[in-house]
Length: 508
Image 1 (cartoon, rainbow, N blue to C red):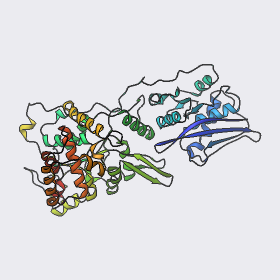
Image 2: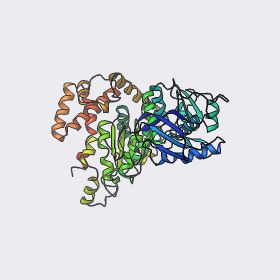
Image 3: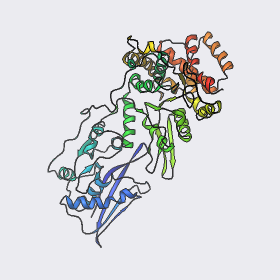
Image 4: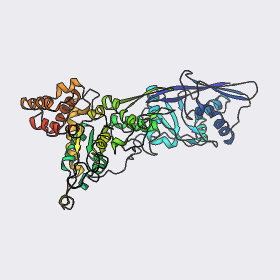
């Protein structure tokens, strides 16, 4: 007897259609799985055999051959357990219903329970594209599955529910969009908690409004981490497309919490400085996204920036320029979106007190140079905004005056981002920081006074072509915050001051 059922697979960010074929023939009892399966798929036969027996179904006493097509694409993971089981039960006439327009995805336990799987959301989007009418998914993935419309999604807890539904004994209700509304990330901290540091707050407001990367340099205890952790509270609201793409990434990585339908708050990732280059960029045996991709449409905060492995820091080059990271391993090549804001923090020297107004630095000139040289020129040049965070005096720390809240700052950020959305409508550019050189030339129109200032600064500071473009984009963001159509002298003057720290510290 022969039967086939539909399923879905995942590779990188893309899902693909799969057909699971089952053939029961005469001969000595044997169970073979073909179609380029990995170890987890090969082990499916043991889980499927135990599930069929423990659920009280008849296990065919014959030669079983299962083919997972297409045969030239490697199949990974335990998600094919359920379709293999259904194909065998269909071939042995234990399932009477029609399964031609139904796809199955899920890992089985030995007693027939269906466990949650990663990558369900992109698989369902592929099912919608392929016009598959119904998909059976694990009950634990119900929230993310409900995002996709035009497909009947049936969340199931065990094999009995699937078989009873297909045989018409006990029908399952499909899940519907809009049932869940659970945020992924915890409540954000507020800028009103930060005393003083008005210059740093202003720089971070500009960074949030235009999507600019930034680096903060200052002695220990000045509030660099405190400022960075409050940056998500002023980031602009996510569009639905951004929410969907971010949720897809977290689903593929297996990082999407249970009962979360969509990620609606921008991610904030803060990897430890001991992380490997592979952990940051992604990869591994199954080519999963790394921290860079998991920060997509959000922030990656890198505290103690010089202490990160040099290969890990250099892996930022491609995503900072292109908004995508490509990983090539022996198992294949995948590209993950990495439209991120990098926020780095570092001390000015190993002891941390170089330039401190009251404490003396104990580092030698050679030690300071070795420390700063851990951050390469190409990486520093790709960071838009350089912020010097100075110590806060006692009067400001003890002041009872209320600081501006994140809510007020976010209003200005959202207003500036709406101007950018209107400007870049119809393109894949979402903010000023991502403008192409052609767009920069078109939208960054300077007044004569501003142009003269930029020319003088370019010659005097010895700026690179990349730094010149970044100053224009930062100026455009400052102008957007002030709702100015043209870039004025004051906008350029402020932007230039955010590109001076590399001259102050790295030119020594």
